[in-house]
Length: 334
Ligand code: TRP
Image 1 (cartoon, rainbow, N blue to C red):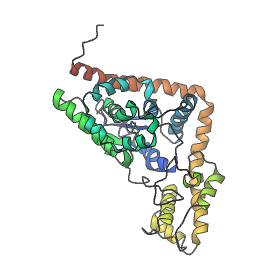
Image 2: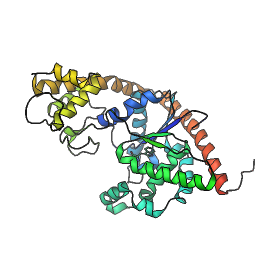
Image 3: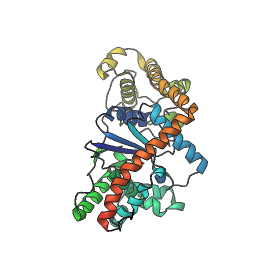
Image 4: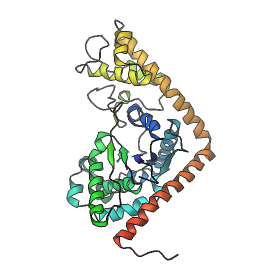
């Protein structure tokens, strides 16, 4: 809770480009939460350097992600969209929390094991303590809910454990956050291997629709989408390819699954794939136009970066000061 309002925190890495699964499973739904919650959407650039990054590229991608948040519909007057590196309280709280986190707990994190296996030449301490920084992100804003994909659930569990441990020693300092796993759109699958989730790092570019793909590219990728044997447009568990396309079409058009089956009765996969491609392209078009417009409006985006960082800094420091006092750091002399 922040100032009597429920609060929400979520973060995304600026590495890689957002794809259709990120949009339908996250961003699109976030837009509806702005009235109910005090929201914080952070571009987590501190987390990004746990893997080696090209500096110019990281800066460009971070700005692109922040712009895309706005283009996708998050009103920056109502949602606090900012860079993690602009609010030093993240790193400060992370240090304190690392003293309340056991190595045994971090050893169990599956994402650490996966990433360590992928980057054997750079298993740095930051990669190891990544979940503590994430806990700091969330707890700084007294977050009630944290919208994330299922892959982040273990990190939220750890955040709750750290918060409860801290509260048990020092009293009610932190709100205990709940993970908030989106119902619709959280299972957008690869267009090439529909048993696998759509991913930004898929080696096959045809598997993934990126938010900034142009209309022709989108339609071409849907035309090439892997479908199942048969040719009926039916939503069935054992037809994962066509099921995924029906799901995407349903979200893009707002049509019910039953109605889609009726609409495409007897019309075949080819026609349906084209319809899905067109629906997705026209859903993304306004976002892309807005993204391009925003890209030309440097002063506007700079203004948002500045005011939102100040807002995040204000709330984050309120929590940090409280924590510093609780653990026994000396008071500041004013
Ligand atoms: N680890 C998250 C991911 O890779 C990103 C993230 C960082 C995050 N801090 C967060 C998500 C806090 C939610 C809340 O997806």
